[in-house]
Image 1 (cartoon, helix red, strand yellow):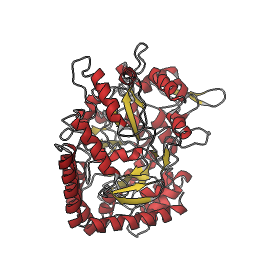
Image 2 (spheres, one colour; image 1 turned 45 degrees about the vertical axis):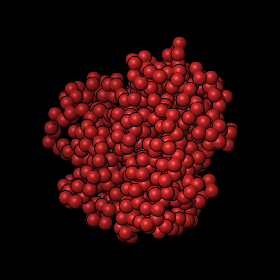
Image 3 (cartoon, rainbow, N blue to C red; image 1 turned 135 degrees about the horizontal axis):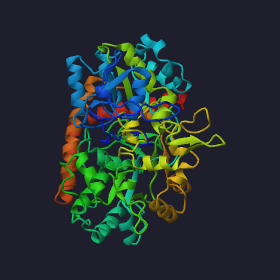
Image 4 (cartoon, rainbow, N blue to C red; image 1 turned 90 degrees about the vertical axis):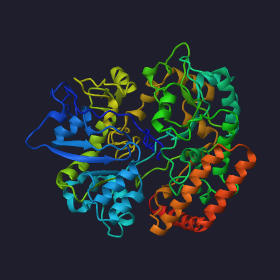
Length: 583
C-alpha cells in the first residue's frame, strides 16, 4: 500500500463505472477534446478491432464488461484495442487460483502481490516480455523505469533474468499523501470541544463523547464510534493491524504475522507479549466494551462499511481515503458555509505516521501478460500504451485544453470548469457527449506506472494534484478550518514540524516469496490468529481477552511460529542490505 492517490491498497472497491452500453462516447485527442463517435465502444466493430480480457485485482469491483468512457476511447483511437474487464469483487484470490488451475488466465493480469505473481511464473503461465521488447519502448527505453525493470529481472523472475511482471507506482512519493491517518468527523469533534489526543487510546474517550453528541444521523440512522470489515482479513485482522502504521510499523508488506518498525529497522512477531497488534486488539476490545464498536464489524463487507461512512454514521477512520462519499463535494458537507464538515486528519501527539518509500523499483502491484494470450502483440501494445508517460499524464488529468491548460508562463493549471468535473469525479461530467466520469481514467486499474508526484520534462508533476495552484484552488472550507486548527497549510507540514513522520524504505518491497512449506505454516497460523483475534475483540472481559491471547500464542507456537519469525527476520535483514543499491 503506497501512500499516494488512493493508490495504496486500497484494494478497495473504487466504485468506478464500467458501462456496457454508453451512447455517445467522445473521440479525444491528446491535445484537445470535442464530441466525436456516437456509439459505445462495446457496439463498435471495426475490421482491425481487438478485444483483450483483463483481470485487475487492484481495482475491486463486481462490475465488468467492455471499458467505456473518455480514457477507453483514447486507447481505442490509438490502438484499436478494447479491454473487457473480468469481475473481481470479493474472493479475488480464489478467482485467480481458479484461472491458474485451468491454465487459462485472462490476457492481462493485475497482480496485487509478489506471491501471486510468483505462483503464475512458476507455473509457466506468464509471457516473458523481453520477447517483445521492440513493441515495448515505453517500458524498456523510459528512464523512469530503468531500476524497476532491472530489479524485476534480477529478483522477480524465478532466476531467468527476464521481465515477466512490470510493477506500478514507480517514482517519488508525494508530500501530504499518507495512506494511514486517524480521522474524525470534524463538526462533531468541534462540538466535543476539540479535545487533545495524546495517544491511540485517547480516541476512545474522544469518540465516546462524539457519539453522545451525535447518536443518530439526521435520517435517524444509528451512529457508531468505530466500524470494521472482514473482506481483507488473511493471516490477521488486517484492519486492526493497520493501526500500526500510525506508529511507523509495517504489518503487511514483510508479513501480516510480523511487525517491522521502519525507523529502528527491526522486526518481530505480532504475537510477542508486548506487540503492537495486541495493543490494537485491546483498543477495539475496549471500544466494544464501551458500546462504540459497530456490531456488524465481524460480518460486514467493505461495501457495506463504505455506505456507512457515506452516511456519516462512523466517527473514526484509519485510512486517509476511507470516507465513502462523505468528503466528496457533491455530498454538501466539506463546503457547507454554515457547518463545514467531513472526515479530517487528527493525529495523536505520540504518533509517527508511516510515509511510503520513494519507489524506484515500484510497489508490489504488477501487470503481466498471459502466455495463452491469442494476440500477444496487441497485449504488449496495450502495456506499451499504458506505461507511456504521456498517456499516463492524460489518464491522470484528462486531455489538455479540456480540464487544464498551460498559462503564459508555461505552468499547468486546472481550469475552473475542470475543478468542477474533478470534484464530481464519480459523476458523468466529462465535457463530451457521454464522456463518462473523471474517475474512469485511473480507477479501473487503481495505479498507473508512475507515481502521481513524478516530475515530468516540463518541470511539473505528472498529476494535477501537485501543480502549484492545485492545493490552493482545490481547498475546501473544512480543510481551511482544520489547517487553522493545526496551524499549518498541510498535514505534511504539521507532521514534519512535530517530528511525526516515519519514512519507510523500499526494503519493504524486497521480501522474496517464501517456500511452499513456509507458506503452509503461515496459512495455518494465520487461520488461528484471524479467528481468535475477532474473539478477543468481542471477549466478555479482560480475563477472557488474556486467555484467548495466550491460547493464540500457544497454538501458533505449536504450528511453527518460531520458524516463521526466524525466516522473516533473516529476509528483512537481507532486504535492508539489498536496498542500498536502489535507494
